[in-house]
Amino acid sequence: MNETASELQLFESLKPELTSFCYRMLGSIDDADDAVQETFIRVWQNWNTFRQESSSKTWIYRIASNLCLDKLRQAKRRVRPVDLFAPAASIDVPRETLPDSAWIWPAPDFSDSPEDRLIRKDTLQLCFITLFQMLPPRQRAVLILKDVFEWSSKEIAETLGMSPAAVNSALQRARETMEREKLQSDELDMMKAEPDRGLLSRYVEAFEQFDIQALVALFHEEGRLSMPPFAMWVQGKDDLSKFFSLTRGHCEGSRFVPVTASGGYPAFAQYVPSGEESCLVPWGIHIVVMKDKRIHHSQIFIHSKLFSRFGLPERIDR
Image (cartoon, rainbow, N blue to C red; front, side):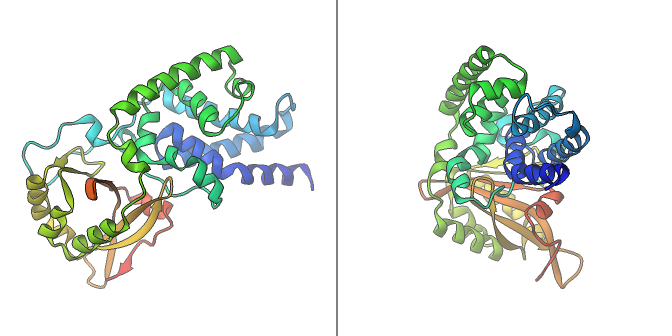
């Protein structure tokens, strides 16, 4: 096998885990894909200058890490609407949006390996991705490489251009922050629990029939619904009922397609009626957080690129 073929094979074998590393760092699957693609270009361009002072894997991760750190240097922290605003005081059709760069976005599974999903799935779930964004970028990289990928301090130091002592110091600070934030995260333990498939089926059935009474009955008393890129989010059964009534014209006739979101969590792609009578078009990806056999948070991510990234069609028959 020639050197170029070996290089391509190595990169392809690393691509799923490299994508999951960049996604944890950046909170956006689009940005993660861009970072991995740019990493490949730089690996290709600079392979002949690689002096094998470290492993080729470490060298590739150094390129990817630097790209992520560069992206994060000028970026604001990504959040979810519930982290940034209070629930809507009055219910209306949502209009105000923030740029895609403001929000955390879901991602599909990165690997076909059951072992990989089992070990790492919790750190790919949205609540964990949200926690990662609380950390300064370099601490974030250290924590992910150490606690998720189980690298040694020496490997991390070589990758990030730090001393092992600086790595250990950054790791300690990152873990302290994460533990503090975990205590304040009401959704983290909920996402760890086995999803209630019956509740999810009833959610889909009620939404597709657009039976507002049945749909709202599935929510906790303080249940919430958010819809990035819209800044507005809704909390409480009364306001949920008002909101669904207002959006009936848009959502009635929807169909749901099951998908698997980051961390192996069940999710649904919502298709809505279009101008053409024969087909439905993409609208949003639903990820539902459950508590006490009720819906605690329905997160609807409205982003045109998500459907192709999840391998979903651009339209489906009614």
